[in-house]
Image (cartoon, rainbow, N blue to C red; front, side, top):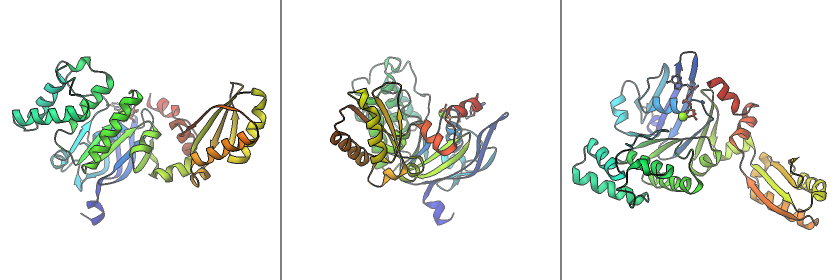
Length: 331
Ligand SMILES: Nc1ncnc2c1ncn2[C@@H]1O[C@H](COP(=O)(O)OP(=O)(O)OP(=O)(O)O)[C@@H](O)[C@H]1O
Ligand SMILES: [Mg+2]
């Protein structure tokens, strides 16, 4: 094992998985440093779950290699299994059992004694804000509660590597925040996390490095900063008090931001796409300057928001096509 390999939680080379005519994973190279959150960002059908399943030894690759902590996922599958845990896109807990019963059952399967499993279950339920729901059947949990229970179940034994496959898809903002807090706490304990997501803002908040995948291939990889430098820093959305001021506002935005400005169908709305240059003093800094300039020009702004690029915008910048094209291929 090379020194480099020892510091990597995951290393893959030319990983391939095909289903019939679909090349679900089509030559993926990944290098995931240990002790970090690594984001895998991609639209529906990009190959995220298939990649995760191969790394978690649930699917056998058709070609290429994958090592987890230096162990081959095919030849040394047992060693890999002993160090990883997977929280699937589709929850694995038993609907008819209570939250506590689920954790105790899984704890016993993992070899804990009755008392130990119960104690660990209690601690996790409390930590994840589920103490009150501990005695309730999971089928009566909300989506956010279920997802939290699912993550709790996957860290009953602290894994060295945790796969979180779209842990927040379909959750409301408050539940998403709770899951993000859990992920941060898990990483603080020394666990490496591979997180798949369809949200750039989620990858941005949690991950130190991000791989963007499309149609089974890695189309961009790097730190968040590097990724944003190549796709732009986001958009400024404005609503003005007076539609008559819109042409002048657009002019001010073009001048101060050096950005493409789009007039929306709503006669008082404007959107300015911030370029990569926004990285210099930050998107918020640029937006603040633009607002100051608008005020100085006597233009009244009723509503203002600064948004990160959407996954669609990321894909447009990186591939020249939007995310929906991937789905068509997947279909
Ligand atoms: N068991 C299977 N049999 C046939 N095709 C499959 C199977 N699993 C996945 N695929 C196909 O492989 C491609 C990649 O699927 P995968 O589930 O890995 O994507 P994903 O990135 O996880 O998407 P999503 O965001 O929708 O979860 C898709 O075209 C999918 O239809
Ligand atoms: Mg998936």
